[in-house]
Amino acid sequence: MAWVLVVVAGLFETVFAVSLMLSDGFRHVGWSVAFVAAAAVSFSLLNAGLRTLPVGSAYAVWVGIGAVGTAVVGMVWFGEPAGAARLLSIVLVVAGVVGLQLTSR
Image 1 (cartoon, rainbow, N blue to C red):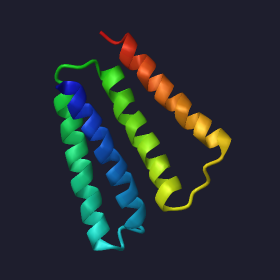
Image 2: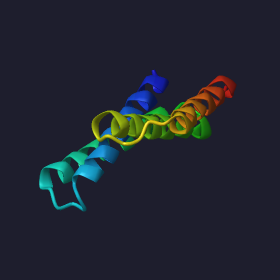
Image 3: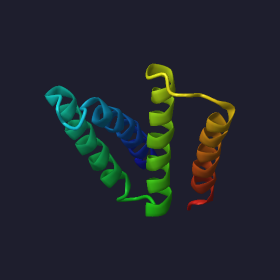
Image 4: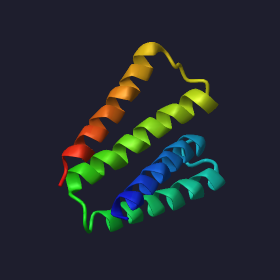
């Protein structure tokens, strides 16, 4: 169950990163509120997962999901480049997170 919390926390990390960008320096109140809410949920779920998981592995999964999710959202919805090197880099992040997950106790 703790891993589920960390995965969902990582998804909320993607939401707060995108909301932060859309807030345009906190000039858009709605997106600013979305950022704060998503960050609060993300950190709360990560905190709950860390009660039973090793911090290094859980944090890596959380960051990896957030980084990959944010990059994918940027490519799909905001027209950011999706070249081969960028896609390979995303695969390497996922491979690193999976490797840490598999080697954690």
